[in-house]
Length: 77
Image (cartoon, rainbow, N blue to C red):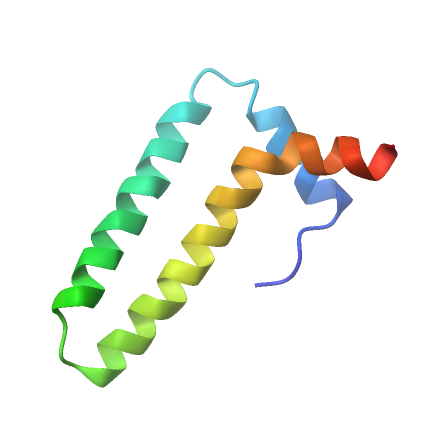
């Protein structure tokens, strides 16, 4: 996953104003927890790698989704 640029951060900050944004964030967090649980239970090496990648990606999206406004504000200061 590429680093989020100014456009992506601005889009995420704008989405935070949408009433449906918490629904999306909840879905992402539930998906993260489901993958984390699956990772604990799997014995398959390939599945383990896929789940690790999924967790990294979901974690990055969740983090950016929650901090986009702060990141933009800090860059402007």
